[in-house]
Length: 155
Image (cartoon, rainbow, N blue to C red; front, top):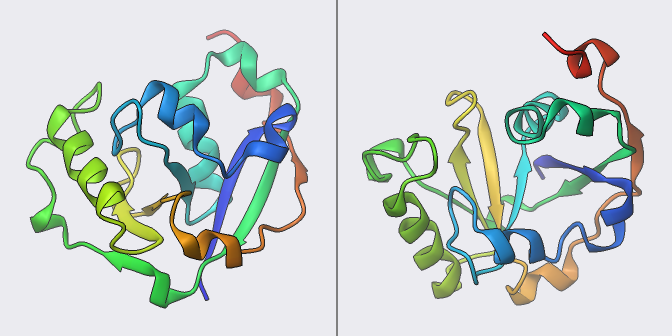
């Protein structure tokens, strides 16, 4: 069973897997209005995802990391050749959002394994919090996570 990681501010621990933030604001692979949860295949990749999105001063906040085992049978894999051509655009392309939103709305499976934009050779996991299989997953106990203070320093 692959292990994935989610880093969130400590105040969001209880709602880390409800998909509400992504529902409100959208994300690379989901349009606003569609809940989704983003995880990474390593703590380091999860931390990099925070670094590219959060202002440096936010790194001084209280963060936690939560591990989640996801059975292979609940993970869809898509070859890079099947992804929208411009999936790496900044900000996220509409085509990437449409691709992920369609997958989420079709309830094809609980999770979709995708390349990370930050490091395309590594994987992110798009989780559908509305999928019935979500009830069977047991996230690990939140553990403190801190960023090296040098990352929060002004350049």
